[in-house]
Image (cartoon, rainbow, N blue to C red):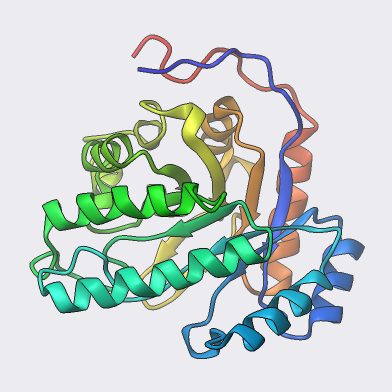
Length: 278
């Protein structure tokens, strides 16, 4: 198990999602409210398809500078480990396209999922998932992009023991979603703790998604008070992760959560490396 030095190298950078479609307004909102970056979620329907379209998209994205941009693929029911080899190949090809786009835009991090939008893993192959994820990580590394796996509220990645295997055996980075960690059955039943998603590999936690919890059919709920998320922020702080995305897409909830996090970051925090005494 890895451990971290208990010195915090720098204050985390807070980012917001690209839920404002007008680029100038998105940038102005982020700057005016003190965000350091944008977590850009791709829209399948608007992915550029031709080289000229890709170049225009890169130029379009450049308008957000000097804000840092990281990337996210919330593609429901598109799985690189589908038991149907043809569907798995289609998913692999799609993610290869996205990785090349991210690289072309100068991006360094891309988050993907396993089993997003599904309520069963019956159509997924564990071995194919692991093998294709390992290849995806290598494909990204060859293009300067760190491919990160996000923990979900359901499925294989909602179980810390299986999440650890996928990360370790593929070499993927980690996107720690603290809302999913709160909502998943493995933590709710107290069989695992939220910390178990990151304690085996704290130095691989490159991104975080922050909100209180997720409710099916409702979505992401913001924290009302710091105590709602304090323990999970403590875990995250001790990993040294520097990219904190407030994954809330309504202005009131977003700014309310940012105020809570700003307050938290001004306070003293528990010392000690992740995994200590465990």
